[in-house]
Image (cartoon, rainbow, N blue to C red):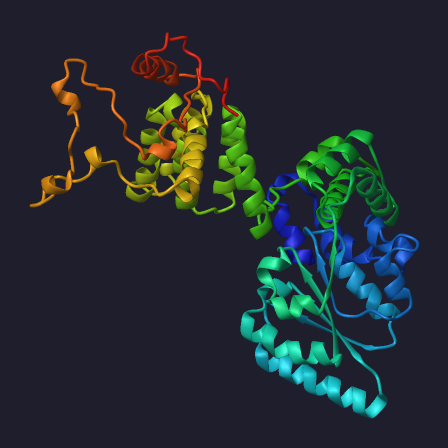
Length: 452
């Protein structure tokens, strides 16, 4: 992070002395100064660059073919690419997918052809944020990667299966980098303190590690600000107060991959009747800019899939929240979504409607001919009576009980049970009604027991 960006972190001016500001702006950022210069210096990612591991062997032998480095921010993707630049005998060049154009790609390919022809030296292209390249840009790269003219090192925080063209991905080896664990972050902060000539309280280290959330760059940036604070008060020891003051608001990690993981956690939390967890994931999604209509749609689905007849009002509440998103809009509709989350999370749960539909669907697809019984067929058109349509049909409203026993399904599936209500919420009452229709004693229990 450039010195100016670091300076923007220091929003509370009265916390920082002129000496602290100067300390931050006069040098390269700590994260850049601590970039590893050998594979042994890499912190974390032992599964890739530990002794004998695949990526390490390829780099050391200078036999690296095209690769995609996929992982969260601050896990070492750029650092690994820079190490390749130091160790390879090939020409090494960089492009940023944010600013590069198809013209830039074609110019690079032309230079790579010239270098290969003049010096018999291949070219490695490091393409940062490769997911930002559109299809046309990726297609422009493909022939050169396919022929071996270019060895591509692509770095991305997004799931490459969603963001990288399949032909380009199929010609690259995918290496996934994991968030740095606690031991790796502690080691990285230790190096940072040594480089700054400082020490730190254990509580300060613990806080910086916790707030880094596996992001090594974030940990070092926060440490650099904390050391500047300590220096500003003429101390060589970073305190927990320094660490707390240095920690600004960290951008929420929420790419396309996290989109699916977070919505999964959201749905499972509500299904598990944890209203607090549901609200947490809702806030996480809204703060990350998730489409509120997508959230509302999932709530409407969940209301029938996981609650169903245990609380018939759940679907109405979810639908009302979805309509509020359209009618009211954000940010006010956040409250309507939260209302729905709490109602659905605290409602009794039943998946019996879902299970019943699945069972009925299986029979509808496989059992017998599925012919409509004669007494249920449409008898309103001329000649229907001559065909026997409607013969024997009993109109339920003519019976004082409002219900009559008659067969409503094809014979081959007439005795199969699809919907078996649970004893939860309103379904307990439904159980009694259905038992009365069958002539069974109402025990309030469905044969399946609790919902799954």
